[in-house]
Image (cartoon, rainbow, N blue to C red; front, top):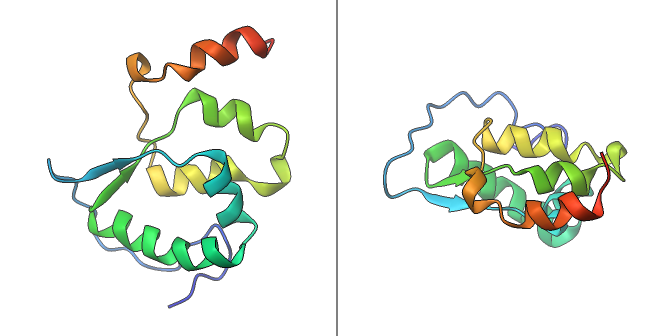
Length: 108
């Protein structure tokens, strides 16, 4: 079944189980915006990624950097897309090293 919107995985309610073998995945801004804009390559990747999340093969992680990088384009709803994929899972603060770089560059 093809999603009805770029941010919707449809009515699929399968149970997600994340075992020790699940790969943790950090999607950078290029991947998120490519999926949101439905660019051809990313449009092919999106359903595969969603299936991997649903089956528990991968865990997508959010970070503070995502929030900073998505601010210039609120129209793309990148954080909503990311949250749909991550289910609120976050990169541990001690691994979120780029955040320190952005704290100096981005006021507030």
